[in-house]
Length: 304
Image (cartoon, rainbow, N blue to C red):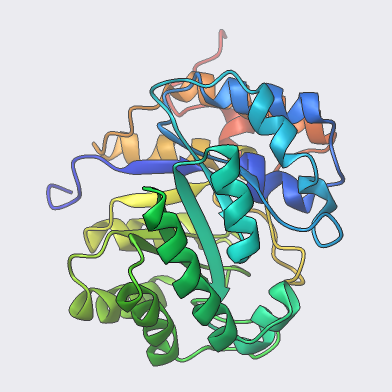
């Protein structure tokens, strides 16, 4: 395993991607979860999204959540936006890092933001300019990168072309999202390989769902390709309101547990992260899918 990255950067997306797929939870519960995660050693947290409350009512209190959290100076907090209007709200709220999402699948993009992919890319170009003028960064997330629940497989060329347009328009980084858990290791290798062959110097993040049980296998494949930036969600929270069957993300504590045991550093306190996953489970009031939350780390022993 000596060819793996020495360390990875983990972005915790549970407070946004996780909670937006649950029944709305109180603002104070969201603040509690973010504050717990801020103490785990995670250095990046996707805190909120600025979307219209009719579209995602679970995020209607984004401004209040952002005001109330106890911000850790060692943590970089980011906000997801669907368009320029959302980005303007995020900038006004003081976010230094913005993520904007566009689907490689035109059908999913229309279901998600009520416009075609090309229209979203035009909007994103303007958004990047506004954010850069304000001294902020923009990562463009290309969702349905490994398939669409409406269209099926999305050609790799299409995925890379959408990302390439964002790069040309000034994106500070690209993330590929496995919106409905359709990725498998071979498909991960093709998308990452094609993108890297054209944009070797562009920062790349990967966002996997575990819908079909391949999430950690996909992470391992990406590690072997040199990718060192991943999203994960505490407890395995998550999904997509506009993607039927899109169950939770890769669980943060499962990802940390696996890669740390392989000698890849994360800087995260696993026990604290498991405690945060238990907090998430209590907040949403249902059993979360994380196996590490259930069983604990492999080194946990019991008294005979």
